[in-house]
Amino acid sequence: MQKRFLCLMLCLAIVLPVGSFALAAEGIQAEEEVAPYFLVDGIAYEDPGLTVYNNITYVSLMNAVLALRPDAVITWEGEYAVVSAEGLTIRVRVGDQYVEANGRYLYVLNGVIAMNGRVLVPVRTIAQAMGAWVGWNAETGEVEIYSGSGAIVSGESYYDSDSLYWLSHIINAESGNQSLDGKLAVGTVIMNRVDSPRFPNTIYEVVCAPNQFTPVQNGAIYREPNAESVIAAKLILEGVRVGGNSLYFVNPSISPNSWAQRNRPYVTTIGAHAFFG
Image (cartoon, rainbow, N blue to C red; front, side, top):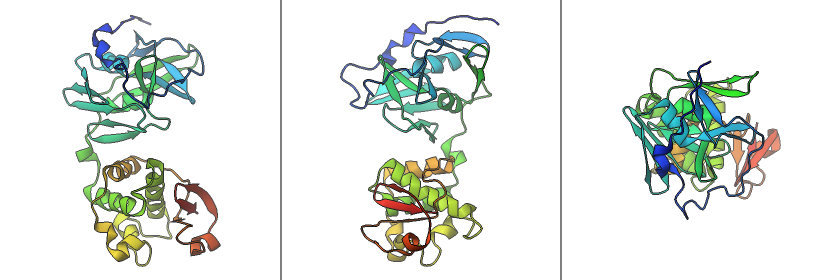
């Protein structure tokens, strides 16, 4: 197998600026020793940042991007590292639970992290953003990336506008003041209902079904959703699920003796909401 180590030292601007990122994940340590390189179409690229964190393989944003797209330019816009190339824009911020790529939102379970002055992202996430895919060589322990035909399809093309409208509005109305996980859990309930034979099979019909969601009854559903509610809706439409098989949620402090609490199996509590199956 052909191997060629490339240092990729021309983009030192991607190294974290001194004093930046209160969420820089200080104290994060690699969980296991891994080879300090990855393969792209059989060619080895050096990456001192390659590490395993919470059982997920992370790579340096800079190294992975330039290995797949040597024409890419990486700059800083405030707290965001921004990747720009023909047909591709990626925005990454340390601490976020997602990477934005061409208007798509790709979930990062453990968040974007920083280690030793490098911004690290899961290898599968950055590969998806750049239209590539990832394999693993069990014999050598090497991470193998295979370039695809191009960057990820844009959010404008991928997200159905009607689904995004109703999903983002119900998430905002029910959990606009909750954490991202709390918003995702509410969105998960909607999608679990869409998939259940006991409920209608479209987002609109689930959200607007009679006597199901208070914001529909009192008009709060029509308030403009905040930015994170829209992001949560897009993550849900990407397939992210939080809260298991939940079909119902209640705020116990507001409804301490609800029908769901009395009749449905408890699943979990996230933020102000308890979830039931």
